[in-house]
Length: 197
Image 1 (tube, rainbow, N blue to C red):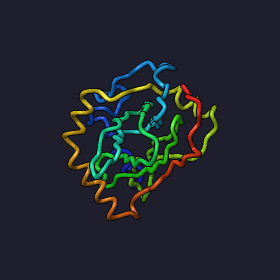
Image 2 (cartoon, rainbow, N blue to C red):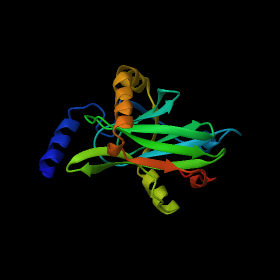
Image 3 (spheres, helix red, strand yellow):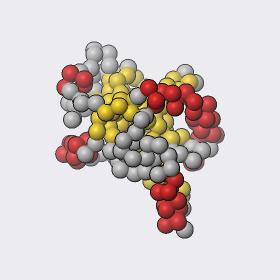
């Protein structure tokens, strides 16, 4: 049964724009040290996508509304600069009703790294979740080294606004069905001073 579900996912993937590494939802960029310089009252969260199927949209929830962080295809890394303090991020999976949660408490001048992975949460029901389990700096460099740095494109913002209502509905559903949500957290001490390319 699980094998059948996985086959269906592969077929569906190739019918959806953006399953492959190239996607109109992102713009590949050449990251530079100066891009990673943080202002005095800035923090940064770096989202790292693995090689699983489907696009993984990430949003930040702000005052009962959401704003786009990025739509990450496989093998991509995105630098998101924001303010210090507490933030709530959600990642979505195509064809699933839930929005998985990342709660953060960020210190100024720090970089926070989080991976996005596709996992089997219940008998073949695959969801993207945030992974904040500790890994070494060498492992982190290897992960990022395999990826392309990206930023949202005009197409991704258009996609976001056309799907914003359904994404908000998934967030609300997740708040009402917390047993279906994988809740992760980044604490102040999880940040590092250096930027890893």
